[in-house]
Image (cartoon, rainbow, N blue to C red; front, top):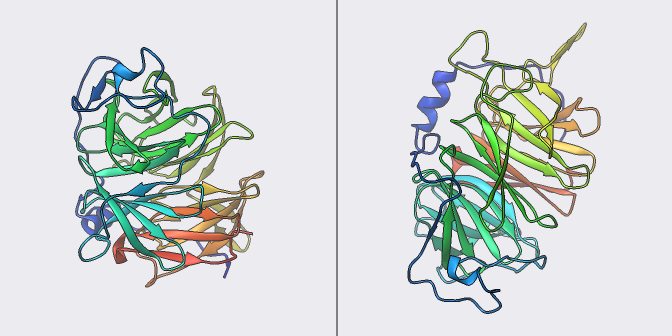
Length: 345
């Protein structure tokens, strides 16, 4: 059910204690600009053009491939789901930080049926063609896996990439967007791992980012939506935002976590926004501390209401809309995925 809710604030120290730092902190590794780290055992893939096969990564092309993994469901079920993406057939891919796995989940049962083991603590997930791109917070890289079988292909990074926190992919343009929570910017790569550009920079300015966490892209209007915790250690820069940029990096607008206040009170406030998703009309913003998902009109960025509440949602870290109707939420605190049919219409 949709409803409006007054702004709620909690000290940032509470969130750190609740999460225990398990998946919010990542390691940093420096390397030459655009360096690719390729599995030396990787053979030449069918259909690789000359010059791409030796890199270990072929252009995934425009055609989506439904993922199929070799591993079964993890023992004990999900432990720490943090990010989520959907497949062409409407299944869910869940990054589990404690298992260090990528899980394939049936939205009808909300249970994992297949899995692949990853090389570190995962963050964002993006599915582009026949490749799955996963942020690796342990190594500070973007790791690439084959959709068919889930075999590791390669990794890429830049010296400025410190802590990938979320990923988003533009299938038609072959672009991978990576939010960096430490560097305070969005890095854009092509699907071969070539660095293209950085969007924004770290700082307190209205067109800057401080702790960007979640990402969503509108491929039609070429807009990038970023959830930013702000400088939560500072009284002056601690307000969270969702900020909007063009693909060209030009700042477009923002939603303040302070909410919209009037004679009847405040609404739309948030403090620790997670991963984002959108439809043609709505933007969905989970708040880890409030334990619910806020909705905004995409065109005006004005608040509409909220979805979900405690105890069913605890530390909601990411959202995914299937069929422009059904909303799915990664609830990190309950180690589950929760569904809300029909609320995304």
